[in-house]
Structure formats: C-alpha cells, structure tokens
Image 1 (tube, rainbow, N blue to C red):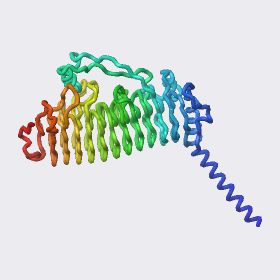
Image 2: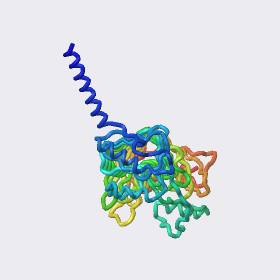
Image 3: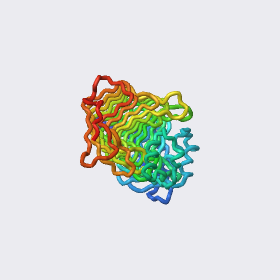
Image 4: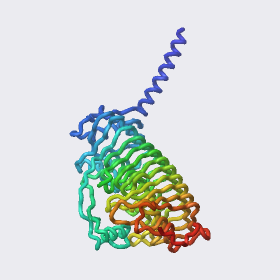
Length: 472
C-alpha cells in the first residue's frame, strides 16, 4: 500500500510540475492586473505595455484585453506574445500626439514608415492580434482645397480626370486631410510568423493594418472599416514587401484602398512582395478595392487572388506601376466585381479593372507588368476595363471568360468610353470575353466594345470582329 501511495504522489507531483511549466510559458496576462482601467478618460498605455513585457519575459503567452473601453497610445508587441481582444473590448487610440512618440525611446524602434501607431512590433517572432474586440483609432479629418487644374500635369495619374472635371464644371478641388495624431491601428515591420484574426479595425487615421518586410503572415476573418466620404490615406490592409502571406475571409470597407500590395522604399531599401494568396474576401473602397502599387520600388511575384467579391468600389482590380518594380506571375480568378463612381477627388472612374505603367520621377524605368491571367470574372461597371502601357509595354496578358456589363454613369463629369481598352501590350490573348451595354440608358460618350492601340496579339484574331467599330 505504501508503494502505491508513493507512486501516486510522484505522478501527481510530476503532473503538477508540467502544469506549472505550461502556466509559466503560455499563461494569460490580464491587463487589469497591471493597472489598466475601462475608462476612456485615463490612459492605459503603460499598464498594457507592462502586461506585454511580463508575458514576453515569461517566455510568451496571451495578453488579455477583457470587455471594456480602454484608452492607449502606442503599445509594442514582443516575440511570443498574442494580444487578445475579448468580445466587448475596444482599445481606443489617444488624440494626444505625444502618446505616440514615447515608444521610440522605450522600445528602440527605428522604423520610419509611421511614427504613430496603436499596436506595433519590430523584428518580433510569433506574434498575434486576435479576438472579437475592436481597435478604434478615432480619426479626425478636415477639408481643404487642392491645387488648381493648371498645376496638375496632364500626363499625371489623375490628370485626365481633373481635366475632365474642369470641362464639365465639376468641383475637383475639395479634398480631405488627416488631423494629427494620425496613428495606424497595426504596424509590424521585420516580423516573422504573424497572425491577425477576427478583430475589427475602425476609423484608422492612416493605413489601418500595415505589414512591412514580414514573412509567414496569416490574416483571417478581420473586419476593417473607415468613412467612405473623407477617409483619405486610411487604407484597409497594406502588404508592403512581405513574403509567404495568406489573406482569407476578410471584409474590408474603407475610404482609401481596401487591400493593397506595395513595395515602398524607406532609407533606400525596398523589399519584394512574393508568394501571396488572397481568397474569400469582400472588398469595398472609395478608391481601389484591390491594388498592386502605386509604390512599386521592388518586384511583385507569384500572387493569386480568387473567389472574392468587389462591391461598390471606385475601382476594382488595379495595377499602378511607377517606380521600377515588375509585377509578374499573377492570377486573378473567379471574381465578381461591381464598381460605381465616387466623389471627384477620389481616384477611379467606376472602372472594374485598370492596369497601367507610368513612370514617376527620375527612375531609369517605370517597371513592368507581365505574365498575368484573368479568368472567370463578371464585372458590372460605370466605366470600362483598361490596360495601358504608357512608359513601358505590358507583356503576356491573358483574359479568359471576362464578362463586362457597361452601365450608365451617375455623375455629371462623364468618363466612360470603350468597353475594353488595350494600349501598349505585347502578347495579348482574349478568349470568351464580351461586353453588354445598357441599351435603354446609353451614354453619349460610349464607344467600341474593344479598342486596341499598339497591341501585339498572341493569336491572329482573339475577338470576332475586333477590328470593327461596334458602336451603339
């Protein structure tokens, strides 16, 4: 009997030691235990940061933000830390500029992409932001008058739209800008094994979620929203020079670009975007729903976008290449697109697809777009599908099963013309593509089904009757 009792006690002691070890390594650190309070008149930055630091020092685990409303400046995550926002929890960004400067001294952060962020991390591994709670950045914006048309170059990205607005007597000068502080909700740079899931991001003053030079990134089920009228620069999700990224099941509804791939140059260094999948998302934007560029200082390669819905965006799919990078090996498939016209100052003509290469500054080359496939796409738009190589020619572009429905514009300054417009393309191939016009409400500016300018085809005659006018 004594041997049995001794053995039992040994087993219990062993199991208890395992449990204690697990608690130490993967414990839960409640921010309330470190002094945070559910009170938006009292700053809880220091308390939340202490919980994060304690969690990291113990080997990692979960920092819990329980139900409540908390006010904070910048909080820096550490390796091994998951910030979990419980149901009913909202972390509000401070409206004091100084509350976003302190992290530069306390954390040693050197990244200059944004000096203001609510949740940040630099060179961290195994970090996460999860839960059904919210990050609310409380953005403030004000109206101002942009430059007059005489100061906007005709060959700029928006030059045509500005000139057209002047022609119709439409206000193109009223625009909006951010009022400091302008924190983004999440900014991670140089991080590996990043998980962002289920959270809501509301009214970010700058890019809502900015991931720069990160690897092995998983973004799933998040909801991002900002004011569709005035939220300039408040992109939804910006993937900047990242590798091995999976984005799925997200709903993004923002003023500026909803989901954007960039390769920004900071301190002379830019990183390529490679091996990226985007699927099962619904995107809305007053600018571009899904964009590659315009910051394009390094390449974009091996990218797939599938099974997504673009709803009421000013532009649907965009590639705007300007800074020397090359976009290659990209597949868009099984997409539903609906575009509409937004206020004049926003980029976009209600065009479902726009790819362009336009040189910016004194770079040796604008860059390139090559080896791109668009397959099984149904698009309803107030303008057409345009692919335009101004500075360089697009190469090896294939459209297969793209159906375009042209609808009348609900704006004074008419911009629509042709259904499909291709300009400066080598190796264009079209299969089973068609345009249907709203013949009950035709626009006087409407032109051809297909317009080709300086195009070299992969097949002799990709569209029956492509050399005919096909005007209404």
